[in-house]
Image (cartoon, rainbow, N blue to C red; front, side):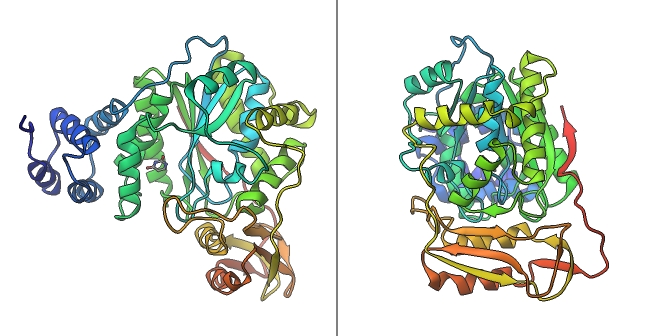
Amino acid sequence: MGERFDAVDVIRTKRDGGTLSPEQIDWVIDAYTRGTVGDEQMAALAMAIYLQGMDTAEIRRWTRAMLHSGERMDFSSLTKPTADKHSTGGVGDKITLPLVPLVAVFGVAVPQLSGRGLGHTGGTLDKLEAIPGWRADLTNDQLLSQLEDVGAVICAAGSGLAPADKKLYALRDVTGTVDALPLIASSIMSKKIAEGTGTLVLDVKVGSGAFMKRIPDAQKLAKTMVEIGNAAGVTTSALITDMSAPLGRTVGNALEVREAVEVLAGGGPRDVVELTVALAQEMVSRSGKGDVDVAVALKDGRAMDMWKKLIRAQGGNPDAPLPVAKEKKYVRATKSGVITEMDALRVGYASWRLGAGRARKGAPVMATAGIELNKTVGEAIEEGEPLFILHTDEPERFERAADMLDGSTAIDGNAAQGRTSVIIDRVS
Ligand code: URA
C-alpha cells in the first residue's frame, strides 16, 4: 500500500516556515515508528522544527500522535489517587528519590516511570542502581500490585509506552535537536499521559545546567505542557526552578543516593529539602488530599520507612553500605570570598568525565563516580580550602574533570553570604 504523504514534502513545509496539518503529523509519527520514514528524514524534520518552531495546535497534535504510538497504562483499579512529577533534567537533581516516598506517606500512589541519564544529566535509574540488589525492571502487573501494596514505584518505563518518543529522543540526542520547546513539551507529555497518572507536577528547570537557559523560555515551556496535560484530563501544574548551580552538594549516582537518604532522615541541603517539600505539597494537595504539612514526614521517620519499603520491594537492601570511589581528589579555591556562581553545566560535564554518565547509549555508568561540593553558592570560602571533591575508580579521569571545573565558579571578596530560593515561579 502506498504512503499517504511524502516525507520530503513534510520536511519542506516545516523548513519553509509552514504549518503541518494534523494528518501530516499523525502520518509522519506513525511512519517513523514503523520505520518507513528514516532516521535521516526525521533528523531533518526535527532540525526544521528546531529552527522554525510549532504553533500550539501542532504541538498538541504531535504529542497526541506520539501518545498513540504505544499503549496507555490504566490505574483506575487502584484504591488511591495517583500523582507523579517530571523534571526537565538538571545536575544533582536527585529530588525523585526523597519525593516519591514522601508523597506516598500521604496516601497518594506514585507511579514514577523513569529513565537513564545520557550526556551530562543523570538518570534516576542509574542513581538507584547504586543500591545493592535494586532492580529497575518490573512488568506492568508487578508495577500495579506494588502501587497498591507499597503505594509507590520507581521503575524503567516499558518499551510499550510512547515508542515514537523513545526513537525520536535518541535521534535528537545525536543531532543537536534536544533543546527545542515543541520537541521537549511533546516528548515529556506523551510519556506522562501514557503513564496514566491522575495528577502531574512538572519541575521545569532554568539556567546553565538546564535545556532552557532563560526564564521566559522556561515559562513558555511550562505553560505549553500544563495546557497539554489539563486538556488530556491530567491535573497538571509546574514549578519553574533554578538550575544555574547544581542542586544540593552531590552530583553522581551513589553520592546522590547518600544525599537523598540524608533528606529522608530529616537533614540534607536546604535547596534539596525546599524543592522536595514544595513538589510533594503540590502533588498531595492537587490529588485532593487537602493542605497537609508534608515536611513533618521527613522529620518523624515516616518518609524514611516508606523509602525502605520501596527499595526492598524492588530487591534492594536500603541498609547496605553504598559503594565508595577508590580514589578522591580535592580541587581548591584559588581566592577567598563568597561563591556567587557555580556553573551547573560544567559540574555536570566534569562528573560525567569522572564516569558518572555514559558516553554511548547502553554503556555502563560508574556508581561511585561524581563530585561533592564542599562549598556552594552563597557560602564563604578561603583560598586553598577544598571547593570540589572528585570521586572516581579510575584516577586517569581526574585531569579532564578538573579542566572542566576550571573557571566554573565565581568567588567575590565583597559579596554577601546566603542563597535565594530555588523556586522561581509556578504555572497551573
Ligand atoms: N526530558 C524528556 O523526557 N524529553 C525531553 O525532550 C527533554 C527532557
